[in-house]
Amino acid sequence: MTKKFKLSADEIKPLATGRGACLATDMILVRGKPVGFMYRAEPDNEQDSGWRFMAGLEDQDYMDDESNLGVYDVNTIANYDPTIVEFIDAPVGAVFERKPGTKNFRPVDDWEPPED
Image 1 (cartoon, helix red, strand yellow):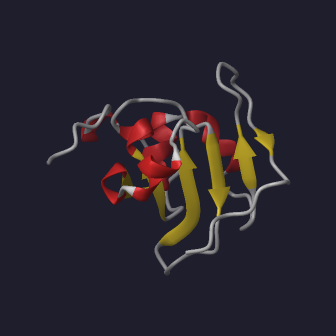
Image 2 (image 1 turned 180 degrees about the vertical axis):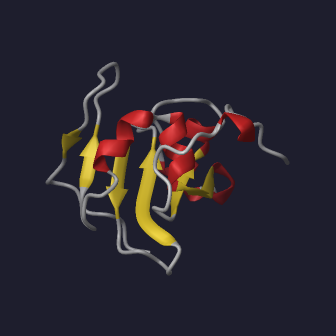
Image 3 (image 1 turned 180 degrees about the horizontal axis):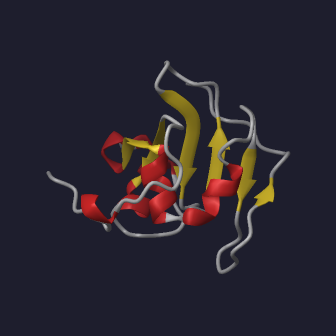
C-alpha cells in the first residue's frame, strides 16, 4: 500500500538540513498531526540522527505495526512541524513533549526510551 503524505515533495523547504535521518509516525506524515512527543536515542547507524517523532496519540499496537512508521530526513519532519527546529541539536537522551492544544514543548525527565 502506498502512503499518501500530507505534504508533497515540492512543498519541502530547507529548514533543518544536514541533520540525518529519523523515525516518525504516519500520524504526523499522513494524518498531518503536529509532533507531540520526541526523543533522541543513541543513533542506529551513521545516517541516523537518533530522533524519534510521534504525535503523542499513538498507542502500543500502533507503534508495534511497522507500517505506521518510516525513516525520513529530519528536515522533512521540520517541514511538517517547524516548532521542532529549535530542539533538534539537543543531545542524545533529550526528551520533549507538547500537551495537546498547546504550542510549546517542555523537557521530560521521567521517561526512558524503549529498549530495541
